Image (tube, rainbow, N blue to C red):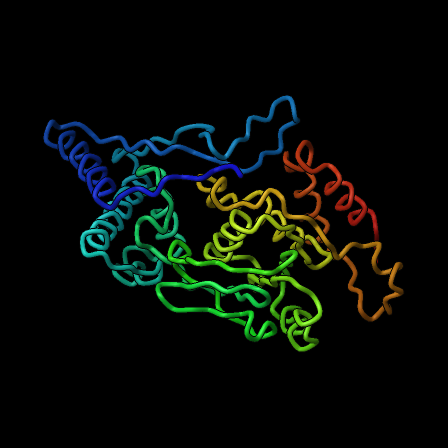
Length: 331
């Protein structure tokens, strides 16, 4: 599988932080305005296939931040403050959530998205993943089925009760001793579907692993799924709602998110298969009309935007055909 990055040592990251800050200090001492260069990455564009150069392992450009522009100056200020927190986390071998970092300077940061952007910028500058900075997410994903693993010395034995939900670990790099008798992995969009499968004892009758990100998947869920694909070599299927939001969730698993495009090659699952639901299922299974909702104007705009993404042109054109059919269908 693509994109297996060696884990950087904390000492190496700390040295990169020192080099980066020293460069800024030298410029300031010499009366020069520092320029911070940040590579830009993307997982998709809307260009035609012949004009598409998307590759999440390579930058598509560089953004230059300078103190001479007020918006840039504020962004550099935030970046350096977050970098100071990251440095302390690495030195003390501690972990913090993005929310913890936000509450360090809430009046300056003003919004969580400001911190998120700074963390992404730091990952790009230091050429590492977010978890390498000891910055963690509050995991929301769930797993059940025919799998057993240990996490920081704690054993998670889903096999003993295959229809019982277990939380997906926050620090996926600590997951060890994976044992599974599953024949496939099923990823479902919604927790309600996951719970319905649990109630129906689905894993008692099917040798599988079921995972849900409870909507748009967080990083631990995506990393955990990616880890399982690298270790188990079994098919992965994804079941999402038959609407543009469901398809976008599927695309996040398959291609990665635009926000973290710099790390997409280490998070995406290229072999995931779209199990459904499809618009044709309403006729195939004779679903009653009260189970269907009409596409809103916003839904149609979102589908139109999805159809123009480059990866639907050259990576999965059959997915595009299904989305195109959804666009034409008035339910």
